[in-house]
Length: 421
Image (cartoon, rainbow, N blue to C red; front, side):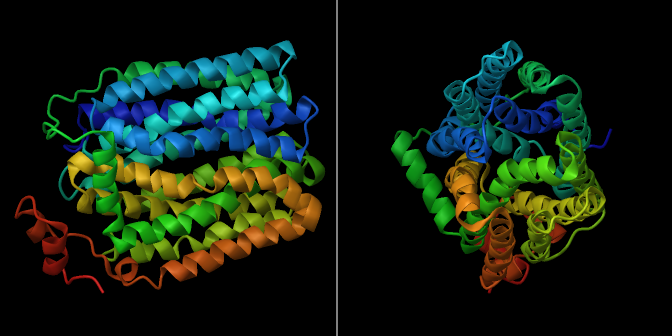
């Protein structure tokens, strides 16, 4: 086992693999559960928005809580809530009695759990590795996590087509139970003690200052606030509808999502070897292909072409993902990781509920094809815009010589490797 793969890192990787295996199938199952209950595209969007709305509302609180309490306890409690909500969802679907308001409520509970889990999990992972091998560790973690998407999406789509969405939701509930058990064994004894804070609001303000003082950070979060919104609408609402009308149903759509997962595995594998010096420039250039799936659905292309497009998108997007995690690990103090991650998550998902809720009305007003082309165009525009931020173009990977100096401030590190702007 590599020296950087310690106990916490190994447990976090195993738990993420299990969770992703269940969750990627559950995303497909939830959409088709709504359609099988008699819902339309607008109802699919409402259920998707119901998960994201509480995620947006509670993320900042979740980040502050995760920097105050032991992060592993926050993660386990969140996993328990996700397990119970998905189990109830599964029971209703299997009984054939699921109503729209019930699906929205249970999905909202799952989103609440995610709001507390995500900042704690990211803070825990970023603090679990040290030194120059951090980038490789993040790449391996993401390769395992995204590898689960290959099996989860493909298997989930096949299971929905063969035995219905209820059993896929039940499997996701079981996955949350297993992952929560693994995370209960995380060791936080080596975490530096937290300085006494001035309360929740003071913690939030402190996290905001850390976030707002870094143009590369908030610039990319604004970019993904818009890009994630339209991509989520395309994937959660339009994708299943295009699959139903043109591709043959849940199976081909699940296979396409599986190819996206396979692409992310290849991208993560690439990043175990490639260490671009300008982290965010390389990562941001690789976000442009995120527009391709929406364009492919707009045509719509055959399932085989869609799978190829999704694979390419997964490869390039993973280059960004590893670069982004490495930049956060390098630049953000450990005791503020969860709060900064919360602002990151908050900005990235803030518009998703609105976009998914409006996907159905937008389809009715402009047509599905025009709506999908609009999604693709917006991704290209906002990605080009963020490249205008000098820090995004120029932030450099910290050198070995700088890292050896010990704990240095962000400004000192930037000066030592050439500066920003």
